[in-house]
Amino acid sequence: MVVYDGECPFCLKQLDRMQKRDANGVFEYQPRQAEGLEERFPKLAEGEFNSGMRLIETDGSISAGADAVYGIARKLDGWKYLAWLYRVPVAHSVCRAAYAWIARNRYRFANNCEDEVCERDG
Image 1 (cartoon, one colour):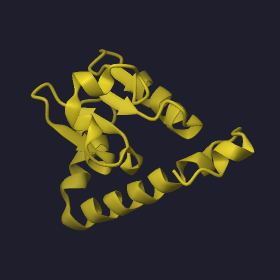
Image 2 (cartoon, rainbow, N blue to C red):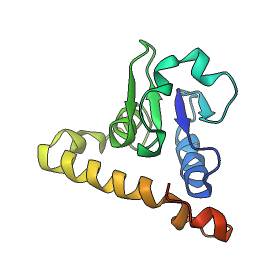
Image 3 (cartoon, rainbow, N blue to C red):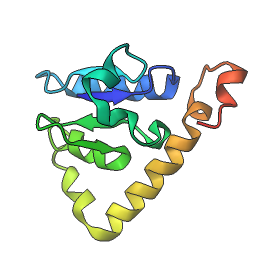
Image 4 (cartoon, helix red, strand yellow):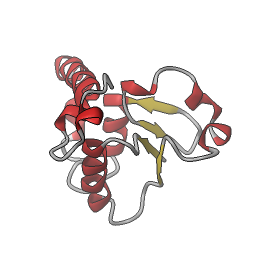
């Protein structure tokens, strides 16, 4: 399951791109604001969600941020062939740093966001 920020226009746009690649319905998608989600997956309540999306694997393990993107990419057509790059030590560090920066600034990347939303700290 992919858990994302359902109030973030930038996140929703990226999610739409991801879902188009998921033609086989590999993932279930839920906004983090969905009622009952933390009761279903108590580990989601741990940590700060602003660090990025979450990927919940079938075994219950949860990855966040760039690690979640890697887990998703490995299973999606068109992305799985690039996912191996994440395993390269320097690329791995760069991806994590880039994802963290994007996650902190995601509200600013929305093309049509409201001023108060764009000014959120993340």
